[in-house]
Image (cartoon, rainbow, N blue to C red; front, top):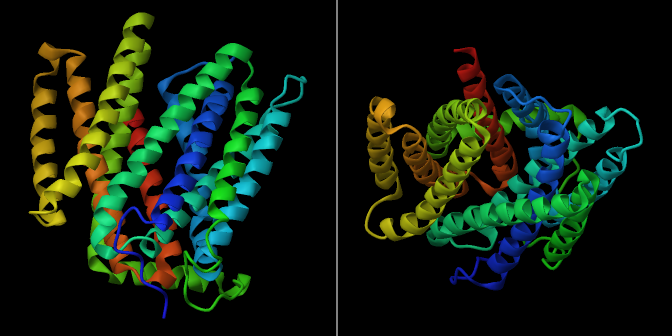
Amino acid sequence: MPPSPPASLWASGFRRLLAARLVAQTGDGLFQVGVAWLVLLSPDAQPSPAAFAGALALVLLPFSFVGPFAGVLLDRWSRRQALVLGQLARAAVVVCVAVTALPTGLPLWPAYVLVLVALGLNRVLLAALSAALPHVVTSERLVTANAIAPTAGTIALGTGIGLGAVVLGVTGSSPVVIAVAVAAYVCAAGVAAAFDRSALGPHTPSRNPILGSAAGDVISGLRHLGARRPAATALLRLSAFRLLFGAWTLVVFTLALGADPPASSEVVAAVAVTLAAGYGLAALLTPLVVRRWRLGRWVAVLAAAGTVVLALTIALAPALGAVVLVVQALVFGLVGQTLKIHTDTQVQRHVDDSYLGRAFTVYDICFNVAFVGGALLALAT
C-alpha cells in the first residue's frame, strides 16, 4: 500500500517537486531565447505568418508520434528516475545544440534536430511532473496545487526568457544563451534526486517496456483514459479551446508584422502582459471559487462569460482597434488557464496511477496538436 500524501499542501514533497519544475522551466526560457534567435529572429530569418505556423508545427508535432510510447516509460519505470535522468539527458543534448550552433560555417540542421530532441524530452518531463503530483498532494488539494505549479512555472519560464534576452544582448551569441540553460537542467536533476526512488510512483511493480508490447500498452492507456469520462471530456474541452487559441495567436502575430515596428512591439508587449495577467488571475480565483462552487460549474460559467466577451470584442473591433487584442488576451489567459487547472485535476483524480504517464503524454499531444491545428486553419483562411 503506497503511503498517503501529507495533508498540508506545502509539505516538503510538493515544495521539492515545485522547485524542480521552476528551475527546469527557467532553463527552458533561456533555451527558447537561443532557439528563437536561431530560427525566427536572426538577421537571416524572414518572419511571416507562414514561417511562424511552420515553426510551430516543426517544434510541436514530431513528439506527437512518439509521445504515447514515452508515456509507457513513465508508467513502467520510477518517475523520480525519469526526472533525474531526463534532465541530465536534456542538459547533454543542449550542450550539443550550443556546439553545433557555433558560427563555424557548417549547416545548422544538426542543431535543429537536437532542438527537437531537447523539446521532446521537456514534454516527457512535464508529463512526469504532472503524473507525480498526486503522490505529494492529497486529492482535495489538487486544484490549488494545479493552480500554483503551472502558473509559477510560467513565471519561471518568463524569467528565463528575460535572463536569456540579457545574455543575448551582452554576448550577441545564441550558443552562449543555450549553454547557460544547461546549469539549470543539472540543478533540476539534483532537486529531483532528493526524492526516494519510489516516492513519485508508479506503485505497480516496475518492468522494462518490451518493444513488441509497447503498442498494446499505448492502446490500453488510450482505452483507460477514454473510459474515464470526466477526464476525457475535460481533455476534449481543453483541446477545442487550444484550437481557437492557436488561430488567435496567428492573427496577433500577423497583425504585429503588418504594423509599424514601434506600434507592433507595444501591441505584442501589451498582449503578452495581459495574457500573463489572465493566467495569474485564474490561479488566484480558481482555488477560492471552488470552496463554494464545484470546479465544473466554475469552468462552465467562465467559458460562457468568455464566449460573450469575445463575441462583443469581435463586433466592436473596428471601433476599439488594438484594445480588442488586449481584452481578448485577458479572456484567453483567464479561461485557458482555468480549463487547464480543471483538466489536470480531472486526469489526476480519475485516471489510475499506473496509467497517468500515458494519460499525460496524450494530454500533451492534444494540447499542442490542437494549438498548431488552430494556427494552420487560420493561415488557410
